[in-house]
Image 1: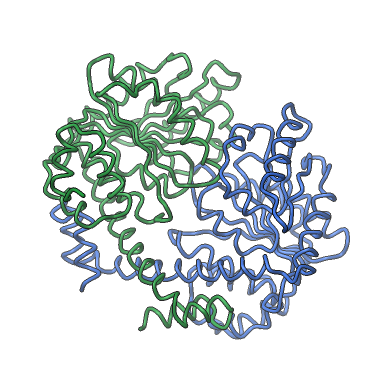
Image 2: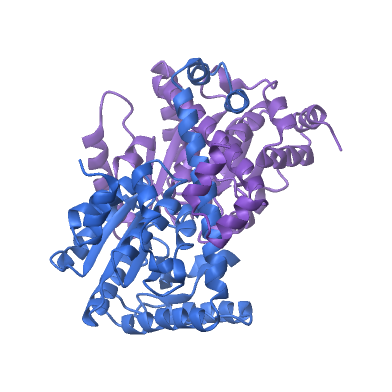
Length: 313
Length: 313
């Protein structure tokens, strides 16, 4: 069993197995390893862009993993190293997607410039975005130039994960039209780039128009998200998407990165709150083996009364 | 301003505005009101069936709200009172659905035997299933015969909500085929009844076959979820669905409700953990106004170090 420091040293030196093992420890919230992360040389602490962290989100079936695969190919074509993190909120509906992702990205397995990894909540819903931020620090220290964070699913925890990214690509399809028509401001706030995938299908043009209108209505003095078309299955539009993501990053840097700083600060606050909630949950779980747990399970105590007893003890 | 006891009395006597106000207080976790709930005569504490709580879940676009609407009509046709709770995890992708639901169910507005209400997380992700359980207690005490809990979305918090239900209907469409093919055991565990909606579309039969196989493979000595077809837009198959849900309830009662008791106990445990996490989060949020918050936002303190400082203080 390696110590945290030696494990991290090996992971940073390019040892894949050590990297994978370190990530498992991050998932579990291992204290020694997470403390070790604090001592790493993380370029990102100094500002955006090195590495460029891109979030990729959208409803199920939007083609996120096909796009991620095309993104890997484009990135490798210009000689940059890329890591892909597929964040799995462990929903049974999205369960299959991770497996699909892995199979699809298998073709990059032999390439040392590509690292693909899923990050699972394993019941730690709260800590997922914190774990993701820590994983990005590790991949940053390990020298990856691009980090693509893909969320499989559409819930709140997935959007929280997007806070770790410099640039967020929201992928939609013509079938998402109904959803978009009534979509709340949240999606506009999070998006740096909109991409309409499967743009060869009917309804694509009207969705592009709809998004362009929504973006224009929302436009302030800052960055205005472009609305692009793609057919990720044949790679069409993917270079434009990468260019738009780079343009967003360049804007962040040129604009004195106001957007970037605010998002990072918000992300740290949320991660702190999530970790505190996680710790409290773990503590309360230990209380369940005693009388409190028995009374709660049998219904002699309702959940709110049990909470009052536990938090005041 | 009414006191909690008087507000609950009025809500139970059929005052709609009092009921709506009480639910808002539940959403906020109001202590006086939630303590008042503990003193109500809740039939459900004695066992399943009065009222029958049915959970309705499935991916976006599966037609959950159209089915809920048809369910209301069928229930009213036999003279029973029904409440529908649309649980909104506040995802921007699912945001529009709630609005759509309300408009669709508008036609039941004048009917005193129908109550439709959305339940929003409002940032309290953790407390959502606890709030939902409390809302069901209130609707139970208010004398509704059927309570339909619809989750708009597909994440972990939505499935947690399903733990409050006696019977869970999982609604899928031919388009969900890919998802189902690789779906994890979680969905099989939660489902009491599978319904393939939009059964007039291509692919419906193969999805039905696929589900029937999955169910058969998973079948133990207990309840075997039937796989039904429906076209909720014209009401086709809806009576069969209601009959299957009733059959599941009858089985739970006849079987000495082993399934029901275990699910209720699990639900109470999860609600307790969620409430504890919520409380911890609220406490930590208050700490953010001080030095800790400033250091965290500026990046002088990483989230994990801040958590260590806060939880040991």
